[in-house]
Amino acid sequence: MLINILKNIYRATKLNTTVLSDFLLVNSLSSYGESFVNNSNLSSTTNYLIWVDTQSFKVNIFTGKKSNWKLIKSYSCSIGKPTTPTPKGTFYIGIKGYSFGYSHGYVCYYYSQFKNDYLFHSILYNLDGTIKDGRLGMKISNGCIRLAKVNAKWIYDNVPAKTTVFIN
Image (cartoon, rainbow, N blue to C red; front, side, top):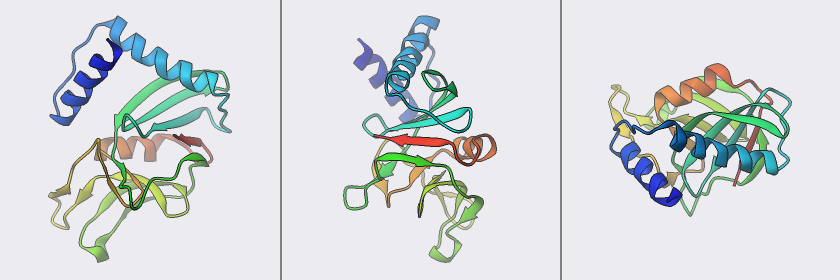
């Protein structure tokens, strides 16, 4: 049942539609994520924790502390393609910036570094502001984690430097 629920949410997300669900459904999905991170012994020096689940193409954001994390946001994302995979492991939010990519003919907004040149950032936009590549839920990036612009901005605005990022 959970697999079918996740598939329906994934399909709705791909179509940019709203998923209407009852409290029990939302609570069960939240409980799964919380159970996973709380049983994984993950900690953070801030009151935020990010878990990127590369199999479900989700960026999950928690608040709290070790063994008591509460899921507050879950965003669809795209990750690195097989030739340029997103690194897996434990990392930390580093520098942040408004945009990059202009010299390459595109622009990405609201980046938050998690390892060297690997970033959370928006989908790709053309220089005129139109969407160049808005696909989410796929292995298509050069290793960065792409998000909807509003979601990349939320991380940029709210998740502080030194926050733990766990990618599996």
